[in-house]
Amino acid sequence: MNKFLIIDGLNLVRRIYAAIPDENDMDSLTERVSVACTKLLRIHHPTHVAIVWDGDEISWRKQLYPDYKKGRKPMPEPLAAGLPALQEHLKSVQIQSIYAAAEADDVIATLAMKTAKAQQGEAVIVSTDKGFSQLNHPRISQWDHFNQQYLNIAELEQKLGVDRSQFLDLMALAGDSGNKIPGIAGIGPKSAAELLRTFRTLAALFSSLPNLGAKQAKKLAEGRDMARLSYKLAQLQIDLPLNINLKDFRVNGPANTPQLD
Image 1 (spheres, rainbow, N blue to C red):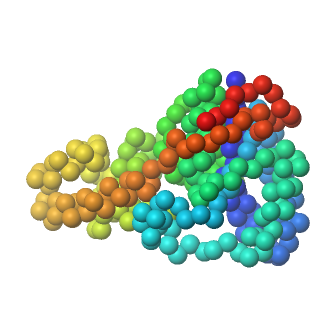
Image 2: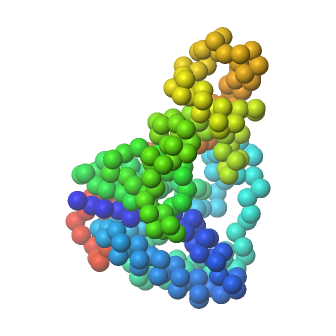
């Protein structure tokens, strides 16, 4: 069975870079990232591995909602200048790169889902981004390298107050401040969770507005379109055309493995 280790490139590298005392010390960054990747290979024993990078194109989310991820700090100039050399070094130690046109998230989600569905494959996503938790498949897991543990879905459900199947509905209502996904004005995470525990889905909630208090019903009615937009912004795409051959990402050399469309 194929086991694909999929590393969220900038999620890993930017956190390692932030811990380096000298922001211009790319040699130290390269060494630390290499050690991290070696450890990931040793822990997970994958048959395939790839590191996925964000691209420079404007994402479809930004086109749909210009304030998406607004205010995020740009990549530090020394890191931007040093990335190509880092990527070449990783290639020399069999960590091949995949370059997304815009955001890496959708490429990672698509690769994970296609792997899980192809010949009973398994995908391990290396990232601290909780957005990947929406990929509800028994053969997709998420590894937090910095805490050295798998994402615990039960703990996340308890923290958010909703079931995994409701994560996207929760973000549609309450938004996501980290990505500047707006949600509905005046609806916070706690009230959104309470509504979803009662009505279970967005569709059931919006069809039940007459049963709510006038003030809350008004907020929801006025924010319905924004909730739909927020849901779309938060939802990962899992069907992008990849056109890659798995043999190019096999650990310790090529093998007869299929192509992922």
